[in-house]
Length: 185
Image (cartoon, rainbow, N blue to C red):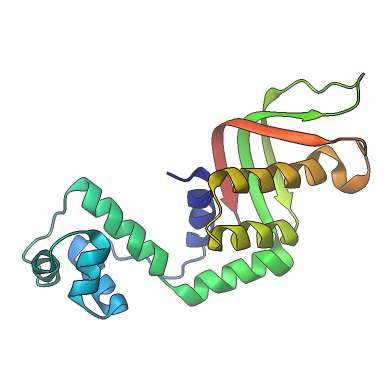
C-alpha cells in the first residue's frame, strides 16, 4: 500500500462528478469497455476470461475480497480521466494542495536551536508548484519515500521557514512515523 500515492488519488477522486460503479458486474462491464475486451480485463485482474464474461452477464455478482479490491482500484484509476486531469492541472497551476498530517517532524539546524523531533499535527496549504511536483513524481512512478521527501521539502519551506521569513538556516526537515496523512485539492 502506498500511503502518499493513495492519498493523492483520494484527493483527486473527490473531484469526480459522477459516482464510480459500485456493483461488481457494473465495474466489470466498465473495465471491459475501457480495455476493449474481456481478455485484456482477465489478464489485468489475473482471472480467467470466462469469469470476466460471467460477471458481465450478471451470472456472478459477489467477488472474493481481494478481487473486489483489485476491480475497484482499476476502475477508479480509469474513471473520469478528463475530470482527474482538470483537477490535477488546477491544483498544479492555481489551487495548490492541502496536506493534513500527523507525524513525527523535526529538523536539522545550527547548534543552539530546538531541533527535537516530535509528533505534530499540521494542516498546511502548499503552493501549486508542490502539487505539480507531487503529481509529476506520482505519474513517473516515484516511490512513497520520494513523495515523502517532496512533502518534507514542502513543509520545510511553507511551514517551518514561512516562505523565507524565518528559520533561514534550517537545513533539513525530517518527516517520519506518519500516523495520519490526507490530501485535499
